[in-house]
Image (cartoon, rainbow, N blue to C red; front, side):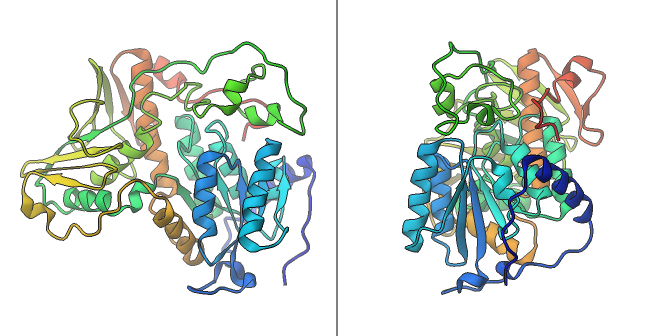
Length: 426
């Protein structure tokens, strides 16, 4: 039987999770709710899920979770009253009841000991902080991307999930799609020969600040909790464009974050193809309208917006001494030789999250590493953050992925982190 639900105060939650963080280094028992099988699953054996910040993208991903028979969504948290109402109705309709509980403060949801995992789909200003809070509260986490705002957060995210033993999946769902997996396998299996150059589409290479728009009348806190919406981000007056905009604070206070938005997909795939999930490029240089990077093994990474084959959004290209392959979101794969395409498998166009969600749920049960674990997300995001720093400074920077600092570059090193508002410094 489940323990009685508890509601801790905000102060009590922070104290309890700090204590829990020290305990999670010990072996832990897998909850019975994470042991469901395929097909019809009794409610007592389902993974009990909470959703945090469920807007447009979050609503889609939550729908992918709701389709899975071994999931039971029991709670929703959002700072917007209209989203709390709409998502509760969505969840209750799925189960034919009125049981989904709503919250404004995520700490109240995270304090529930009957929740196994959370979907975090807030604005990017919250992703890393919310994920760390969730892990310290004993929850497994599926977090939309970009998962971090800077290099320091990337390292903190990875360290937290290693320490707590929780399962993390970054929302870079192309790691679970057949065409991208096939192209990566060609690179990793040596079928292209020795890798030379990887190409990623960042969908923009500019950097700009998120800005300070004229103040609008601030709604009642029950309707929109603006202070909580800002969370760790720098305070600014309420403005509805910031509230409803998708590009709020994505990396170092930047809108779009240059390489970070699509880069957290495309650069991530290049990292994977280069067998570089535990490292990052060591050199970054803006060259015209492109960003050139280099790994310690000599492989080049080029972030560019033009010159792609018409294969849909989020294209990547891998080039070796013997051949090349290119693919994108329309799921077509083009290669230098037809022989490379033998056995390419099913074509699944677009970028559905179903397979990625399933990978996460399976790992919640087995305690295995997901395809986009916190360690994987750490270095793919570091590559994007370091590229943004080179773009922001307008010059070459050199990075040591062992010490995780820029080499002899005080100006660049100051940009590895940023001030976070209290009480959200972790």
